[in-house]
Amino acid sequence: MMNFFTNIVNWANEHPGQAIGAFLGFLIGLLILMFGLLKTCLVVILALIGFFIGKIKDEGLGGGFKDIFKRDKE
Image 1 (cartoon, rainbow, N blue to C red):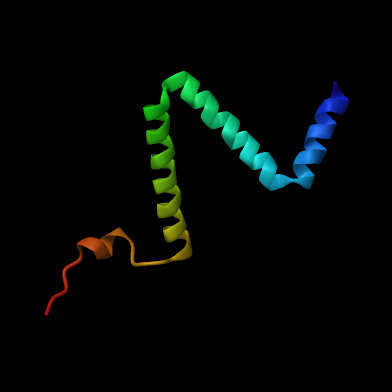
Image 2: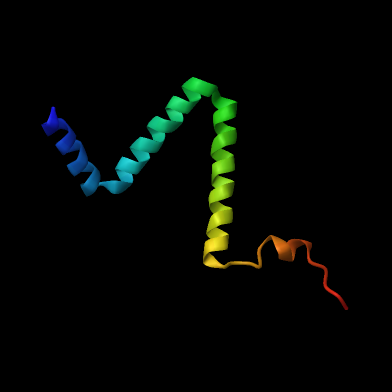
């Protein structure tokens, strides 16, 4: 049994992109079975929005939310 898990870990180390894709596919499939398609799509969309907001904040792109509502005083 340990040999099976060792092979899985070795494969994941050699092919990280495929391993992440397989894991995400399994996770999304499980969520669809548990909660349904629409709720799963909502969770995925909200997670992607949160990811992109965090990425913008981390990389310092744009001024952030304060600049959206900031008025220029002329």
